[in-house]
Image 1 (tube, rainbow, N blue to C red):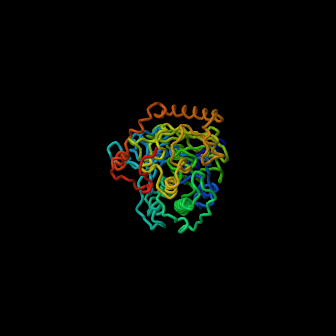
Image 2: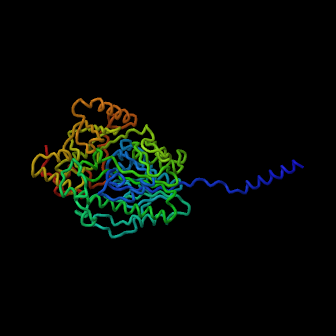
Image 3: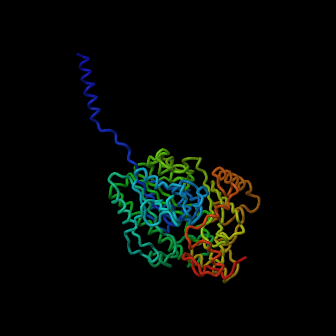
Amino acid sequence: MKSYYQLFILFISINLFACQPEKEEAKRPNILFCIADDATFAHMGAYGCSWVKTPGFDRVAQEGVLFMNAYTPNAKCAPSRSCILTGRNSWQLEEAANHVPFFPTKFTTYAETLKQNGYHVGYTAKGWAPGIALDSTGDKRELTGKVYNEFKLTPPTSKISSIDYTANFEAFLKDRKEGEPFCFWYGSTEPHRAYEFMSGVEKGGKKLSDIDEVPAFWPDTDSVRHDMLDYAYEIEYFDQHLSAMIELLEKNGELENTLIVVTADNGMPFPRVKGNKYEFSNHLPLAIMWPAGIKGKGRKVEDFVSFIDFTPTFLEVAGVTKKNSRMQPIQGKSLTDILYTAKEGIINPARDHVLLGKERHDLGRPNDWGYPVRGIVKGKYLYLHNFETSRWPSGNPETGYMNTDGGATKSFILNDRRTNGHSKWWDLNFGKRLEEELYDIENDPYCIHNLAIGTEMSEVKNNLKQQLFKELEEQEDPRILGDGQVFDTYIYSQENVRGYYERYMSGEDVKAGWINETDYETAPLD
């Protein structure tokens, strides 16, 4: 009797277990990647900035993680975005190390990979740019997914984009299949130049006295302060759409399982910043939130992280492995070690440095040559090695110093030299540089005092140089392996910028649209 009873209980148990619904697999998270166009890390409210109001960015930081040491390897639009999309440093990306390149067909982006693995993928406004990306058949590639730019609005200034970023994000969400995870790239074109001069004061309600400190490499004048406030106004416009997108996700019940990343591609579009390798150039804002996945709200993390860490992070949280991916080898390391802990400060002691570099950015030198630099940030020091010190860092004077976007600050510095003769501002922003530079960025964040001069800091300098060159050799950087000239042989992808210097010097009118007429010197400078 007892055995029959036991069999009966077992039968009931088996049937009850069989009737239980299978445990639901964890849903793959949505990914919302938000990238401002030219914004330095210090100019978000969460970092203590009082003259730029960024409640959207601040919310992401408060409900997620604020990264105190996030760097792009290459502080220019196209190469920085190439690093984000591939997980590789720019010197590992062939043509994509340069600005305005042909994107190599051999490299696959995380967005393309997620699309191949069931994600709804798209972007609005500025994706990967500027340059041309084609597949092996000559068809245009969607490096950041399908474009959503249909919806327009009347912008608050004549220089802000008319694309309605939020409305296009909403259209993207409506376009996906039920239950399909999404990956969206919000690529604002702000605060890229040009600006409507004095818009920060006249439309943003700001005052010149709001700025607590003008960087030490610029003169403290009204025109420079206006330029900074116009920049601030455009950051705030980017942030307004960020806030609206977060609210839209919240309204739709999607916020809980959406990984939101907010950053910028490079530093502010001002002299000695964008296109350079200094602290304000490569050190960028970064806040990440994901209510369902991140532990410990409002944490500040001091680990050094690089833009090459985004791709492996996105692939990991999406469950994409080498078996279901055609991605090239990835240099970056997933950020999940930081996201999945509740710790603050230094999480992974191995993340104690980042590498920087640049090759050819904007045109304006003979033979379309670039200005090659490699650098390392470790602890409180920034070490830079300039390989071609006979060249002008920002492009030749007679062709408009074209690696610095035209604007009020640039114009003031150039006119000051022409009017008053030799100028320390011109030297800092446009003058030639020594082969080695070393800065204590903790005490000299503006990178004014070059500690590589003299012997007092020789040990620090040599140790950083040795580590930099060793790691670059391991990463097969052509510049270190003796084939650095290859970067100067890659042609621009746009016909109207090829051979600019030679065409200009021959008398052809080829003045570019992103610099001012007054930026050109009447003759070459010594």
